[in-house]
Length: 492
Ligand SMILES: *[C@@H]1O[C@H](CO)[C@@H](O)[C@H](O)[C@H]1NC(C)=O
Ligand SMILES: *[C@@H]1O[C@H](CO)[C@@H](O)[C@H](O)[C@H]1NC(C)=O
Ligand SMILES: *[C@@H]1O[C@H](CO)[C@@H](O)[C@H](O)[C@H]1NC(C)=O
Image (cartoon, rainbow, N blue to C red; front, side):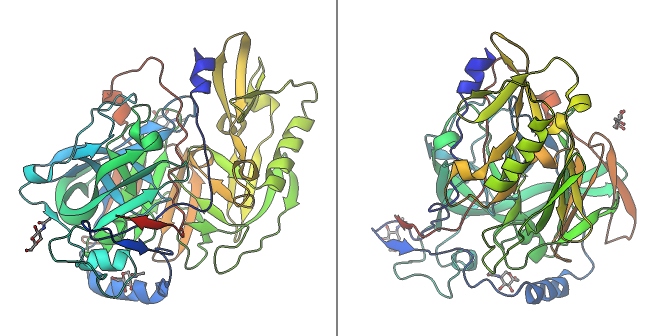
């Protein structure tokens, strides 16, 4: 069963020549080239001061109920529940810090999955059924700024929609048009207490899907991009004066679900590392890797464009991708302690072996060191996942992936996904331009500060899985919801 399961695994991680080609103005055959959504990005500090001026004192905290788990042999993703429209309907969206747009499947969608093997009930957004929804036109400010333009493109007429198209790192893609409607989020109002509140946001109404997004295997209603760009839900809530640009997740790979909260976290405290400025993603500088106490320093070359040694924190990626040399170092050091281990390659991607004892007793801890005093400890039970393979008892596979093997251009990229982010409170602070984490019990709770009242409130974990149907034969999913800027023209 599981061998079959693994062969269903499809991972096409491409790091270049793809993605965010967007185009606007539906209708005529207009060809638009968007070189990079993030080109000419303005100075972040001026954005920040502008934002904090607008915020005033009405900043609050939001609690997004979370489900899913990071195990590659299970769902392999985490999702949140968000209400949209009037009357409000619930949508299950993957939480993805590697992309910048919230979108949900739309009623008129071609190739959107109609059922999900993850066990969530799928809902399609119907613009005509929400009394507060309106189509975003190509002349709207949101459309113009998302395309990094100063004025609407030629060909844009008032009644034309603002279209988008996104290609993710796993090669799957989605497209549609933007809608403005109410999003209903849980405002934290007391200890373990929240009340729904709404905010107008712009999100994508997806009318076409391809690749993994078009299949039932890992189907959700959509993806919530929590990236740093202005188009993300976080940035929209911040510019509406609702929140500070600070959020945290605690992904629980033990019990599933966890915590996803927008706002200031008071407890636990985290150590932080600076975000590399002016990047399209949450980039950090990784300085060394340590296996079982042996430290190997890494060349930490970074350039304005993220450099060839970019390290990206991405909750939308299941595994962890390491540059060829780092991967080599880590695997060699781990395996040197087990010279008799017989490795089998599964699905041309996973190195698997049989081991009867406790992996935590037998395998070394891997630690990554970042600029500042931040390190990331990854235990054997995090980087190894157990699988059922016919004819192989106690089978385990390594979750480490070699990014060089995925793509030539991505060979120096480190992508830190759920494999290493789970069971930690990860705090993204765009106000301070830092990111940090601390090992944490994600089934417990955190303490958040309510900037409106000055009070502090406990926010607990959720597990939406608990209400979802249990599945037999769930297909393995490795969705790297990871956008890269691109040079592709997109024809409408
Ligand atoms: C993002 O929004 C801020 C504040 O609304 C604005 O000052 C800034 O120019 C925007 N950035 C981009 C790249 O559009
Ligand atoms: C847009 O407006 C023009 C002129 O008012 C009209 O001819 C056209 O049918 C409209 N298109 C759509 C898609 O509504
Ligand atoms: C994590 O927290 C939950 C809820 O408070 C608790 O039941 C559980 O025992 C804790 N787990 C560990 C390992 O401490």
